[in-house]
Image (cartoon, rainbow, N blue to C red; front, top):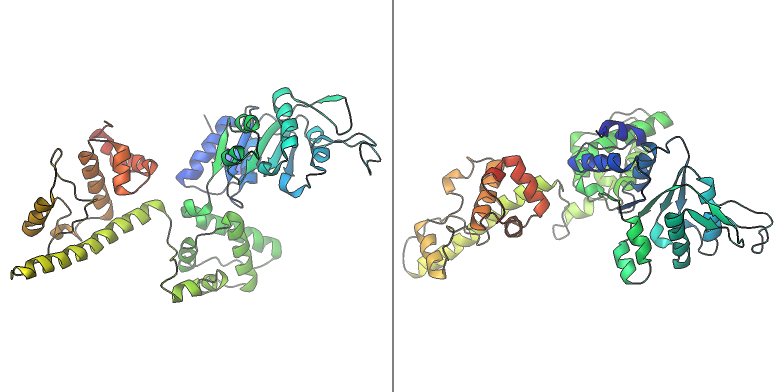
Length: 406
């Protein structure tokens, strides 16, 4: 049984969202083995913290974990840094030196930004993974090592393989276990936890009173896309606390810090939204219904007006959301007739305002599943949501009892 809370505490992982819980469970499953792990994710998303969690919950937790930033070491000396060198191996090698792999013997080595390794170094790394041995630069003696390898990258290694910049055999050896660290924008429900942790840590260390963030300030922060992920959030929190010492952080302070004034004053620029997936999908569904109602009313006015008939408001008629009875094909003439007599199989007007967003969402999913005879892939495509989101909503609403994949 995986103790998620123990794993969370061991490395100080922040978050209570479903995505974080799933990641913690995966860490718990692989930590106590010696298999190599590849951690993927955008820069600043917290890949090193995940590596620490894997190490601290492994059988090697009482040994050291050596962290190597492959992107920060010049290609000319990276082999010497990783594997060490023999005295006199090159100019300046006045004495023999052990590399990172020898220093991490019995423990764990974390190779951050492994996608930056030169191809010739990749070949030697593959030999370490497969045979547990290497040679120092300039030496012919084989050195054995017992080390667990954890690698991380913000690059798409499969693409690098196709381009010839990363060895395919090494890629497959590394990706046996892949832990994907999601960007902050995909689990914004955890943002307030990050803000509280970073705020308390920084104010405690710098002897600054911490009066917290207002709910409005947090809402503004949730509407920001955070391209720099958790690292950017931490920097923003610390800057806000330094610039507003002893004050409660307000919406205005956050807006100024994140430079959101430009976006708020110009409606033609992209608008930041709360990227909580469920909320966005519900809002988009309702907004689309309202827009389509306006479009249909305009069409109705043109058609009925040309016939000299009184114009009455009609029901919304989004073709993507209009779900005819199973087995029936709807022609253009059918559609016009149904617009006129109000028999479109859509949300009835007297139900708008009487239904909750959850009820609206559930009804639309059920109708889409009925139309596509339970085919979830087609249903997800029609509703413009991911299959993963559809599966979760089917479970949440208990819809799986009514429909099965065809």
